[in-house]
Image 1 (cartoon, one colour):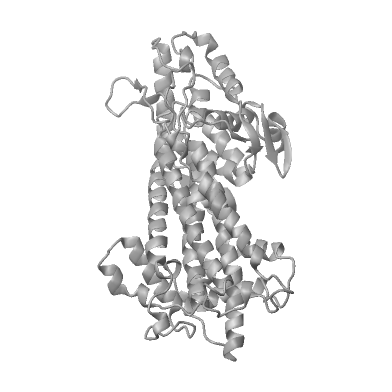
Image 2 (cartoon, rainbow, N blue to C red):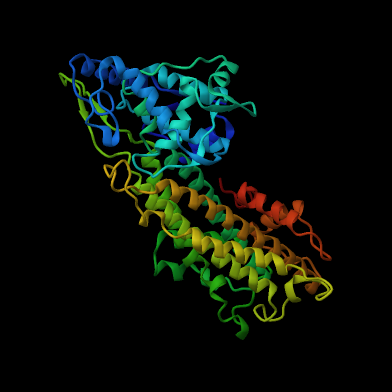
Length: 519
Protein backbone atom coordinates (compact mmCIF):
# COMPACT_ATOMS: atom_id res chain seq x y z
CA UNK A 1 0.00 0.00 0.00
CA UNK A 2 1.39 3.39 -0.98
CA UNK A 3 2.48 5.94 1.60
CA UNK A 4 0.14 8.84 2.39
CA UNK A 5 2.34 11.95 2.39
CA UNK A 6 1.19 14.48 4.96
CA UNK A 7 1.81 18.19 4.49
CA UNK A 8 -0.71 19.68 6.90
CA UNK A 9 -2.84 21.03 4.08
CA UNK A 10 -4.43 18.32 1.93
CA UNK A 11 -5.84 15.61 4.23
CA UNK A 12 -9.33 14.43 3.17
CA UNK A 13 -11.94 12.18 4.79
CA UNK A 14 -11.01 9.35 2.43
CA UNK A 15 -7.41 9.57 3.64
CA UNK A 16 -8.53 9.30 7.26
CA UNK A 17 -10.55 6.19 6.40
CA UNK A 18 -7.61 4.64 4.51
CA UNK A 19 -5.23 5.12 7.44
CA UNK A 20 -7.68 4.38 10.25
CA UNK A 21 -9.38 1.32 8.74
CA UNK A 22 -7.08 0.00 6.04
CA UNK A 23 -3.70 0.62 7.67
CA UNK A 24 -2.27 2.86 4.98
CA UNK A 25 1.23 4.00 6.06
CA UNK A 26 2.06 7.68 6.46
CA UNK A 27 5.01 10.03 6.43
CA UNK A 28 5.63 13.76 6.06
CA UNK A 29 6.63 15.50 2.86
CA UNK A 30 10.14 17.01 2.76
CA UNK A 31 8.57 20.46 2.86
CA UNK A 32 6.64 19.60 6.01
CA UNK A 33 9.76 18.26 7.71
CA UNK A 34 11.48 21.54 6.87
CA UNK A 35 8.67 23.56 8.49
CA UNK A 36 8.82 21.35 11.60
CA UNK A 37 12.57 21.88 11.98
CA UNK A 38 12.28 25.64 11.55
CA UNK A 39 9.46 25.80 14.09
CA UNK A 40 11.58 23.92 16.62
CA UNK A 41 14.51 26.23 15.97
CA UNK A 42 12.17 29.13 16.75
CA UNK A 43 11.34 27.63 20.15
CA UNK A 44 15.04 27.21 20.92
CA UNK A 45 15.70 30.86 20.05
CA UNK A 46 12.83 32.02 22.24
CA UNK A 47 14.16 29.98 25.16
CA UNK A 48 17.68 31.30 24.66
CA UNK A 49 16.54 34.90 24.94
CA UNK A 50 14.41 34.19 28.03
CA UNK A 51 11.06 34.96 26.43
CA UNK A 52 7.89 34.36 28.45
CA UNK A 53 5.91 31.76 26.49
CA UNK A 54 2.66 30.22 27.73
CA UNK A 55 3.06 26.55 28.49
CA UNK A 56 6.79 26.69 27.83
CA UNK A 57 8.08 28.94 30.58
CA UNK A 58 4.75 29.20 32.46
CA UNK A 59 2.19 26.88 33.98
CA UNK A 60 -1.07 25.96 32.26
CA UNK A 61 -4.64 27.23 32.40
CA UNK A 62 -5.35 29.00 35.67
CA UNK A 63 -1.67 28.49 36.58
CA UNK A 64 -0.46 30.50 33.59
CA UNK A 65 1.03 33.25 35.77
CA UNK A 66 3.52 30.92 37.45
CA UNK A 67 7.01 31.06 35.87
CA UNK A 68 8.84 27.82 35.11
CA UNK A 69 12.64 27.75 34.92
CA UNK A 70 14.39 26.29 31.85
CA UNK A 71 15.68 23.46 34.02
CA UNK A 72 12.09 22.43 34.73
CA UNK A 73 10.92 22.55 31.08
CA UNK A 74 11.05 18.79 30.50
CA UNK A 75 9.43 17.96 33.84
CA UNK A 76 6.66 20.44 33.06
CA UNK A 77 5.79 18.65 29.82
CA UNK A 78 5.85 15.18 31.39
CA UNK A 79 3.75 16.36 34.32
CA UNK A 80 1.25 17.85 31.89
CA UNK A 81 0.66 14.55 30.13
CA UNK A 82 0.26 12.63 33.36
CA UNK A 83 -2.01 15.10 35.15
CA UNK A 84 -4.24 15.59 32.10
CA UNK A 85 -4.67 11.87 31.44
CA UNK A 86 -7.91 11.87 33.45
CA UNK A 87 -10.29 10.31 30.92
CA UNK A 88 -12.92 7.75 31.85
CA UNK A 89 -15.28 5.38 30.11
CA UNK A 90 -14.76 2.64 27.54
CA UNK A 91 -11.61 2.63 25.44
CA UNK A 92 -12.02 4.02 21.94
CA UNK A 93 -11.91 1.45 19.13
CA UNK A 94 -8.67 1.09 17.23
CA UNK A 95 -9.86 2.91 14.13
CA UNK A 96 -10.82 5.99 16.13
CA UNK A 97 -7.44 6.06 17.90
CA UNK A 98 -5.70 5.82 14.54
CA UNK A 99 -7.84 8.67 13.19
CA UNK A 100 -6.83 10.78 16.20
CA UNK A 101 -3.13 10.01 15.69
CA UNK A 102 -3.38 10.97 12.03
CA UNK A 103 -5.23 14.21 12.79
CA UNK A 104 -2.60 15.19 15.35
CA UNK A 105 0.24 14.37 12.96
CA UNK A 106 -1.23 16.49 10.20
CA UNK A 107 -1.69 19.43 12.56
CA UNK A 108 1.92 19.22 13.72
CA UNK A 109 3.05 18.95 10.08
CA UNK A 110 1.93 22.53 9.48
CA UNK A 111 5.00 23.65 11.38
CA UNK A 112 3.52 26.04 13.93
CA UNK A 113 3.76 23.84 17.03
CA UNK A 114 7.46 23.94 17.88
CA UNK A 115 8.08 20.22 18.41
CA UNK A 116 11.26 18.39 17.44
CA UNK A 117 11.12 16.15 14.34
CA UNK A 118 11.69 13.06 16.50
CA UNK A 119 8.34 13.62 18.21
CA UNK A 120 6.57 13.36 14.87
CA UNK A 121 8.77 10.45 13.81
CA UNK A 122 7.76 8.44 16.86
CA UNK A 123 4.08 9.17 16.26
CA UNK A 124 4.47 8.13 12.62
CA UNK A 125 6.21 4.89 13.58
CA UNK A 126 3.58 4.07 16.20
CA UNK A 127 0.86 4.53 13.58
CA UNK A 128 2.69 2.53 10.91
CA UNK A 129 3.74 -0.30 13.25
CA UNK A 130 0.37 -0.64 14.95
CA UNK A 131 0.97 0.76 18.43
CA UNK A 132 -2.44 2.09 19.46
CA UNK A 133 -2.70 3.97 22.76
CA UNK A 134 -5.60 3.12 25.06
CA UNK A 135 -7.78 6.24 25.04
CA UNK A 136 -10.92 6.51 27.22
CA UNK A 137 -13.92 7.93 25.37
CA UNK A 138 -15.01 10.51 27.94
CA UNK A 139 -13.36 13.55 29.48
CA UNK A 140 -13.06 16.17 26.74
CA UNK A 141 -14.88 19.51 26.96
CA UNK A 142 -13.90 20.40 23.40
CA UNK A 143 -11.81 23.36 24.64
CA UNK A 144 -8.89 23.61 25.23
CA UNK A 145 -9.26 21.03 22.54
CA UNK A 146 -9.39 17.38 23.56
CA UNK A 147 -6.98 17.55 26.48
CA UNK A 148 -7.79 14.32 28.32
CA UNK A 149 -8.09 11.99 25.31
CA UNK A 150 -4.93 13.39 23.74
CA UNK A 151 -3.01 13.06 27.01
CA UNK A 152 -3.86 9.34 27.02
CA UNK A 153 -2.83 9.20 23.37
CA UNK A 154 0.56 10.76 24.17
CA UNK A 155 1.42 8.84 27.35
CA UNK A 156 2.89 5.78 25.59
CA UNK A 157 5.24 8.12 23.71
CA UNK A 158 7.00 8.75 27.05
CA UNK A 159 6.74 5.12 28.13
CA UNK A 160 3.65 5.54 30.31
CA UNK A 161 -0.03 4.73 29.92
CA UNK A 162 -1.11 1.72 27.91
CA UNK A 163 -1.26 0.72 24.26
CA UNK A 164 -2.54 -2.20 22.23
CA UNK A 165 -0.12 -4.07 19.94
CA UNK A 166 -1.27 -7.09 17.92
CA UNK A 167 -4.43 -7.27 19.98
CA UNK A 168 -2.63 -7.29 23.34
CA UNK A 169 -2.98 -4.45 25.84
CA UNK A 170 0.39 -3.58 27.35
CA UNK A 171 2.12 -0.87 29.41
CA UNK A 172 3.31 1.98 27.20
CA UNK A 173 7.06 1.26 27.29
CA UNK A 174 6.48 -2.44 26.72
CA UNK A 175 4.20 -1.73 23.77
CA UNK A 176 6.87 0.43 22.13
CA UNK A 177 9.57 -2.16 22.78
CA UNK A 178 7.43 -4.86 21.16
CA UNK A 179 7.86 -3.13 17.79
CA UNK A 180 11.41 -1.88 18.32
CA UNK A 181 10.63 1.67 19.45
CA UNK A 182 11.83 3.65 22.47
CA UNK A 183 10.02 6.34 24.50
CA UNK A 184 10.93 10.00 24.23
CA UNK A 185 12.03 12.49 26.83
CA UNK A 186 9.91 15.51 25.98
CA UNK A 187 11.41 18.96 25.81
CA UNK A 188 9.92 22.44 26.05
CA UNK A 189 6.51 22.95 24.38
CA UNK A 190 6.17 19.34 23.19
CA UNK A 191 3.71 17.93 25.70
CA UNK A 192 1.44 20.93 25.21
CA UNK A 193 1.63 20.59 21.41
CA UNK A 194 0.62 16.93 21.64
CA UNK A 195 -2.51 17.42 23.73
CA UNK A 196 -3.79 20.94 23.04
CA UNK A 197 -5.91 20.51 19.90
CA UNK A 198 -9.00 19.04 18.30
CA UNK A 199 -7.72 15.65 17.13
CA UNK A 200 -10.43 13.60 18.87
CA UNK A 201 -13.23 15.75 17.47
CA UNK A 202 -11.69 15.99 14.01
CA UNK A 203 -10.48 12.40 13.68
CA UNK A 204 -13.55 10.63 15.00
CA UNK A 205 -15.83 13.21 13.38
CA UNK A 206 -14.19 12.43 10.02
CA UNK A 207 -15.04 8.73 10.32
CA UNK A 208 -18.63 9.49 11.37
CA UNK A 209 -19.10 11.90 8.49
CA UNK A 210 -17.69 9.47 5.93
CA UNK A 211 -20.07 6.76 7.17
CA UNK A 212 -22.95 9.23 7.07
CA UNK A 213 -22.24 9.90 3.39
CA UNK A 214 -22.53 6.19 2.67
CA UNK A 215 -25.67 5.92 4.78
CA UNK A 216 -27.64 8.76 3.23
CA UNK A 217 -27.14 7.34 -0.26
CA UNK A 218 -27.95 3.83 0.95
CA UNK A 219 -31.17 5.23 2.41
CA UNK A 220 -32.05 6.48 -1.09
CA UNK A 221 -31.57 2.94 -2.40
CA UNK A 222 -33.62 1.34 0.35
CA UNK A 223 -36.35 3.96 0.06
CA UNK A 224 -36.55 3.29 -3.68
CA UNK A 225 -36.92 -0.44 -3.00
CA UNK A 226 -39.76 0.29 -0.58
CA UNK A 227 -41.39 2.55 -3.17
CA UNK A 228 -41.39 -0.36 -5.60
CA UNK A 229 -42.81 -2.74 -3.02
CA UNK A 230 -45.67 -0.27 -2.41
CA UNK A 231 -46.29 0.37 -6.14
CA UNK A 232 -45.34 3.98 -5.65
CA UNK A 233 -45.18 6.63 -8.33
CA UNK A 234 -41.95 7.93 -9.89
CA UNK A 235 -43.60 11.27 -10.77
CA UNK A 236 -42.39 13.08 -7.60
CA UNK A 237 -38.82 12.58 -8.82
CA UNK A 238 -39.41 14.28 -12.17
CA UNK A 239 -36.54 16.64 -12.92
CA UNK A 240 -38.92 19.52 -13.67
CA UNK A 241 -40.28 19.52 -10.12
CA UNK A 242 -36.82 19.91 -8.66
CA UNK A 243 -35.58 22.48 -11.15
CA UNK A 244 -38.13 24.94 -9.78
CA UNK A 245 -36.93 24.36 -6.21
CA UNK A 246 -33.26 24.09 -7.09
CA UNK A 247 -31.60 22.99 -3.88
CA UNK A 248 -28.59 21.15 -5.34
CA UNK A 249 -28.67 18.07 -3.15
CA UNK A 250 -32.44 17.72 -3.40
CA UNK A 251 -31.89 17.66 -7.17
CA UNK A 252 -29.04 15.14 -6.77
CA UNK A 253 -31.24 12.86 -4.69
CA UNK A 254 -34.11 12.99 -7.19
CA UNK A 255 -31.72 12.21 -10.05
CA UNK A 256 -30.27 9.28 -8.10
CA UNK A 257 -33.76 7.90 -7.43
CA UNK A 258 -34.60 8.14 -11.15
CA UNK A 259 -31.48 6.13 -12.01
CA UNK A 260 -32.21 3.56 -9.32
CA UNK A 261 -35.76 2.98 -10.57
CA UNK A 262 -35.07 2.99 -14.29
CA UNK A 263 -36.73 0.02 -15.98
CA UNK A 264 -38.76 -1.03 -12.93
CA UNK A 265 -41.97 -3.03 -13.44
CA UNK A 266 -42.95 -2.55 -9.80
CA UNK A 267 -43.94 1.09 -9.99
CA UNK A 268 -47.58 2.14 -9.99
CA UNK A 269 -49.39 3.73 -12.92
CA UNK A 270 -49.54 7.49 -12.18
CA UNK A 271 -52.78 7.68 -14.20
CA UNK A 272 -54.56 5.42 -11.73
CA UNK A 273 -56.83 7.28 -9.25
CA UNK A 274 -55.20 5.41 -6.37
CA UNK A 275 -51.75 6.58 -7.52
CA UNK A 276 -52.35 10.32 -7.63
CA UNK A 277 -50.16 10.96 -4.59
CA UNK A 278 -48.12 8.71 -2.35
CA UNK A 279 -47.50 9.27 1.35
CA UNK A 280 -44.91 11.88 2.27
CA UNK A 281 -42.34 9.27 3.35
CA UNK A 282 -42.28 8.06 -0.26
CA UNK A 283 -43.11 11.18 -2.22
CA UNK A 284 -40.82 13.56 -0.33
CA UNK A 285 -37.63 11.49 -0.32
CA UNK A 286 -35.71 14.08 -2.40
CA UNK A 287 -36.79 16.90 -0.10
CA UNK A 288 -35.94 15.03 3.12
CA UNK A 289 -32.99 12.89 2.04
CA UNK A 290 -31.65 15.82 0.04
CA UNK A 291 -31.73 18.04 3.11
CA UNK A 292 -29.79 15.39 5.05
CA UNK A 293 -27.26 15.29 2.21
CA UNK A 294 -26.81 19.04 2.79
CA UNK A 295 -26.11 18.42 6.47
CA UNK A 296 -23.52 15.75 5.68
CA UNK A 297 -21.87 17.97 3.08
CA UNK A 298 -21.52 20.74 5.65
CA UNK A 299 -19.90 18.32 8.09
CA UNK A 300 -17.37 17.26 5.43
CA UNK A 301 -16.59 20.90 4.62
CA UNK A 302 -16.03 21.78 8.28
CA UNK A 303 -13.96 18.71 9.11
CA UNK A 304 -11.67 18.88 6.10
CA UNK A 305 -10.74 22.41 7.08
CA UNK A 306 -10.21 21.34 10.69
CA UNK A 307 -8.06 18.35 9.74
CA UNK A 308 -5.71 20.72 7.95
CA UNK A 309 -5.53 23.38 10.67
CA UNK A 310 -3.05 24.28 13.40
CA UNK A 311 -5.16 23.88 16.53
CA UNK A 312 -2.79 24.00 19.50
CA UNK A 313 -1.82 27.01 21.58
CA UNK A 314 0.38 28.98 21.51
CA UNK A 315 1.44 28.89 17.86
CA UNK A 316 4.87 29.77 16.46
CA UNK A 317 5.23 32.07 13.46
CA UNK A 318 8.61 32.64 11.84
CA UNK A 319 8.22 33.54 8.21
CA UNK A 320 11.06 33.81 5.72
CA UNK A 321 12.69 37.22 6.06
CA UNK A 322 11.35 37.69 9.59
CA UNK A 323 14.26 38.44 11.93
CA UNK A 324 12.85 36.79 15.05
CA UNK A 325 10.03 34.31 15.63
CA UNK A 326 6.78 35.35 17.22
CA UNK A 327 4.55 33.41 19.59
CA UNK A 328 0.83 34.09 19.32
CA UNK A 329 -1.59 32.91 21.96
CA UNK A 330 -5.14 32.37 20.71
CA UNK A 331 -7.98 29.90 20.70
CA UNK A 332 -7.70 27.62 17.67
CA UNK A 333 -8.24 24.68 20.03
CA UNK A 334 -11.88 25.68 20.56
CA UNK A 335 -14.11 23.05 18.98
CA UNK A 336 -17.27 25.11 18.51
CA UNK A 337 -17.32 24.70 14.76
CA UNK A 338 -17.05 20.91 15.00
CA UNK A 339 -19.59 20.82 17.83
CA UNK A 340 -22.16 22.66 15.74
CA UNK A 341 -21.43 20.55 12.66
CA UNK A 342 -21.78 17.29 14.60
CA UNK A 343 -24.96 18.42 16.34
CA UNK A 344 -26.36 19.34 12.93
CA UNK A 345 -25.30 15.92 11.61
CA UNK A 346 -27.03 14.14 14.50
CA UNK A 347 -30.24 16.06 13.82
CA UNK A 348 -30.08 15.29 10.10
CA UNK A 349 -29.50 11.58 10.66
CA UNK A 350 -32.33 11.52 13.20
CA UNK A 351 -34.65 12.73 10.44
CA UNK A 352 -33.32 10.04 8.11
CA UNK A 353 -34.24 7.40 10.70
CA UNK A 354 -37.65 8.97 11.24
CA UNK A 355 -38.65 8.80 7.59
CA UNK A 356 -37.16 5.32 7.12
CA UNK A 357 -39.12 3.96 10.09
CA UNK A 358 -42.34 5.40 8.62
CA UNK A 359 -41.72 3.64 5.30
CA UNK A 360 -41.03 0.41 7.18
CA UNK A 361 -44.33 0.78 8.98
CA UNK A 362 -46.18 1.19 5.67
CA UNK A 363 -44.79 -2.12 4.48
CA UNK A 364 -46.13 -3.91 7.58
CA UNK A 365 -49.53 -2.28 8.17
CA UNK A 366 -52.31 -3.32 5.76
CA UNK A 367 -54.20 -0.12 6.59
CA UNK A 368 -51.20 1.88 5.37
CA UNK A 369 -50.35 -0.24 2.32
CA UNK A 370 -53.96 -0.60 1.15
CA UNK A 371 -54.03 -4.31 1.90
CA UNK A 372 -51.27 -5.21 -0.54
CA UNK A 373 -49.61 -7.46 2.00
CA UNK A 374 -50.64 -9.59 4.97
CA UNK A 375 -50.09 -8.02 8.38
CA UNK A 376 -46.39 -7.69 9.20
CA UNK A 377 -45.48 -9.50 5.96
CA UNK A 378 -46.26 -12.84 7.63
CA UNK A 379 -47.45 -15.70 5.42
CA UNK A 380 -49.81 -17.01 8.12
CA UNK A 381 -50.65 -13.99 10.30
CA UNK A 382 -51.59 -14.94 13.81
CA UNK A 383 -49.59 -18.14 13.81
CA UNK A 384 -46.67 -16.00 12.65
CA UNK A 385 -45.90 -12.47 13.86
CA UNK A 386 -43.63 -11.73 10.92
CA UNK A 387 -41.84 -8.39 11.04
CA UNK A 388 -43.87 -6.94 13.92
CA UNK A 389 -40.91 -6.60 16.27
CA UNK A 390 -38.58 -5.40 13.56
CA UNK A 391 -40.66 -2.24 13.49
CA UNK A 392 -40.65 -2.09 17.31
CA UNK A 393 -36.86 -2.04 17.28
CA UNK A 394 -36.73 0.56 14.52
CA UNK A 395 -39.18 2.73 16.47
CA UNK A 396 -37.09 2.36 19.63
CA UNK A 397 -33.93 3.43 17.82
CA UNK A 398 -35.63 6.33 16.08
CA UNK A 399 -36.95 7.54 19.43
CA UNK A 400 -33.56 7.13 21.11
CA UNK A 401 -32.10 9.31 18.37
CA UNK A 402 -34.47 12.12 19.35
CA UNK A 403 -32.87 12.21 22.79
CA UNK A 404 -29.32 11.98 21.43
CA UNK A 405 -30.01 14.77 18.92
CA UNK A 406 -30.31 17.38 21.67
CA UNK A 407 -27.43 19.73 20.76
CA UNK A 408 -24.38 19.30 22.96
CA UNK A 409 -23.14 22.67 21.73
CA UNK A 410 -26.05 24.40 23.48
CA UNK A 411 -24.31 23.58 26.76
CA UNK A 412 -21.12 24.90 28.31
CA UNK A 413 -19.53 24.64 31.73
CA UNK A 414 -16.60 26.68 33.12
CA UNK A 415 -13.36 24.91 33.92
CA UNK A 416 -9.82 25.64 35.16
CA UNK A 417 -11.02 28.01 37.88
CA UNK A 418 -13.19 29.86 35.35
CA UNK A 419 -10.22 30.72 33.12
CA UNK A 420 -11.71 28.48 30.45
CA UNK A 421 -15.17 29.92 30.92
CA UNK A 422 -16.77 28.76 27.67
CA UNK A 423 -16.30 25.34 26.13
CA UNK A 424 -17.73 23.70 23.00
CA UNK A 425 -18.73 20.21 24.21
CA UNK A 426 -17.64 19.15 20.72
CA UNK A 427 -16.40 15.73 21.82
CA UNK A 428 -19.85 14.97 23.25
CA UNK A 429 -21.42 16.15 19.98
CA UNK A 430 -19.16 13.76 18.04
CA UNK A 431 -19.95 10.83 20.32
CA UNK A 432 -23.69 11.51 20.09
CA UNK A 433 -23.50 11.86 16.31
CA UNK A 434 -21.80 8.47 16.13
CA UNK A 435 -24.54 6.89 18.27
CA UNK A 436 -27.24 8.41 16.07
CA UNK A 437 -25.37 7.18 12.98
CA UNK A 438 -25.29 3.59 14.25
CA UNK A 439 -28.96 3.70 15.24
CA UNK A 440 -29.95 5.10 11.86
CA UNK A 441 -27.93 2.48 10.02
CA UNK A 442 -29.97 -0.14 11.86
CA UNK A 443 -33.28 1.55 11.09
CA UNK A 444 -32.44 1.69 7.38
CA UNK A 445 -31.29 -1.94 7.56
CA UNK A 446 -34.65 -2.90 9.11
CA UNK A 447 -36.41 -1.18 6.21
CA UNK A 448 -34.16 -3.07 3.76
CA UNK A 449 -34.95 -6.38 5.47
CA UNK A 450 -38.70 -5.79 5.21
CA UNK A 451 -38.58 -4.35 1.69
CA UNK A 452 -36.91 -7.51 0.42
CA UNK A 453 -39.67 -9.62 1.98
CA UNK A 454 -42.34 -7.42 0.40
CA UNK A 455 -40.71 -7.58 -3.05
CA UNK A 456 -40.81 -11.39 -2.94
CA UNK A 457 -44.43 -11.39 -1.80
CA UNK A 458 -45.31 -9.03 -4.64
CA UNK A 459 -43.67 -11.33 -7.17
CA UNK A 460 -45.65 -14.25 -5.80
CA UNK A 461 -48.83 -12.24 -6.16
CA UNK A 462 -47.95 -11.35 -9.75
CA UNK A 463 -47.08 -14.93 -10.59
CA UNK A 464 -43.92 -13.82 -12.38
CA UNK A 465 -40.55 -12.27 -11.53
CA UNK A 466 -41.36 -8.60 -11.98
CA UNK A 467 -38.28 -6.60 -12.89
CA UNK A 468 -36.81 -4.19 -10.35
CA UNK A 469 -35.06 -0.96 -11.29
CA UNK A 470 -31.47 -1.02 -12.48
CA UNK A 471 -30.13 0.11 -9.12
CA UNK A 472 -32.64 -1.50 -6.78
CA UNK A 473 -32.16 -4.87 -8.48
CA UNK A 474 -28.50 -4.78 -7.51
CA UNK A 475 -29.38 -3.96 -3.90
CA UNK A 476 -31.96 -6.76 -3.78
CA UNK A 477 -29.44 -9.26 -5.16
CA UNK A 478 -26.90 -8.41 -2.46
CA UNK A 479 -29.58 -8.69 0.23
CA UNK A 480 -30.70 -12.11 -0.99
CA UNK A 481 -27.13 -13.39 -1.08
CA UNK A 482 -27.07 -12.95 2.70
CA UNK A 483 -30.66 -12.74 3.99
CA UNK A 484 -33.37 -15.20 2.83
CA UNK A 485 -37.08 -14.77 2.32
CA UNK A 486 -38.80 -15.83 5.54
CA UNK A 487 -41.48 -18.49 5.07
CA UNK A 488 -42.26 -18.61 8.79
CA UNK A 489 -41.21 -17.01 12.05
CA UNK A 490 -37.57 -17.35 12.97
CA UNK A 491 -35.12 -15.53 15.22
CA UNK A 492 -34.92 -12.12 13.57
CA UNK A 493 -31.86 -10.63 15.29
CA UNK A 494 -29.22 -12.49 13.25
CA UNK A 495 -30.81 -11.42 9.96
CA UNK A 496 -31.17 -7.86 11.22
CA UNK A 497 -27.48 -7.87 12.13
CA UNK A 498 -26.57 -9.14 8.67
CA UNK A 499 -28.69 -6.47 7.00
CA UNK A 500 -27.04 -3.84 9.20
CA UNK A 501 -23.59 -4.93 8.08
CA UNK A 502 -24.64 -4.72 4.42
CA UNK A 503 -25.74 -1.13 5.06
CA UNK A 504 -22.96 -0.01 7.42
CA UNK A 505 -20.06 -1.53 5.50
CA UNK A 506 -21.28 -0.09 2.20
CA UNK A 507 -21.96 -3.38 0.39
CA UNK A 508 -25.40 -2.27 -0.78
CA UNK A 509 -24.17 1.07 -2.09
CA UNK A 510 -21.11 -0.44 -3.81
CA UNK A 511 -23.25 -2.94 -5.70
CA UNK A 512 -25.68 -0.24 -6.77
CA UNK A 513 -22.93 2.09 -7.97
CA UNK A 514 -21.40 -0.71 -9.99
CA UNK A 515 -24.77 -1.52 -11.56
CA UNK A 516 -25.28 2.14 -12.46
CA UNK A 517 -21.75 2.49 -13.83
CA UNK A 518 -20.75 4.95 -11.11
CA UNK A 519 -17.62 5.11 -8.97
